[in-house]
Amino acid sequence: MKLIINGETKIFNENITLEKMLEELNLTGKVMAAAVNMEIVKQDKWDSYVLHDMDKLELLDFVGGG
Image 1 (tube, rainbow, N blue to C red):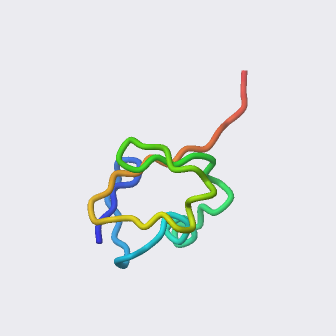
Image 2: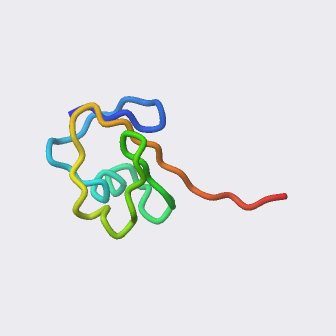
Image 3: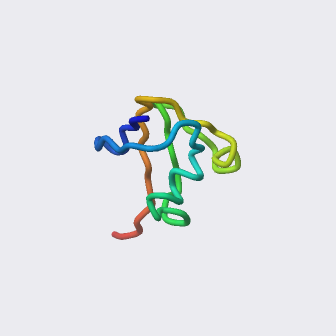
């Protein structure tokens, strides 16, 4: 299955959850917000949110600064 993550195409197994995808990319704890196909997915749903072929994800972290 292909997913488009922050503009890059990545290949994953079928029936992968958002949380498992983050684990496979070693991003657990680094991503603060996720949107799938322009809709925010709350963190408490990541473990049950199943991704589909060609979903477009935007993964965000927050950086302080001034």
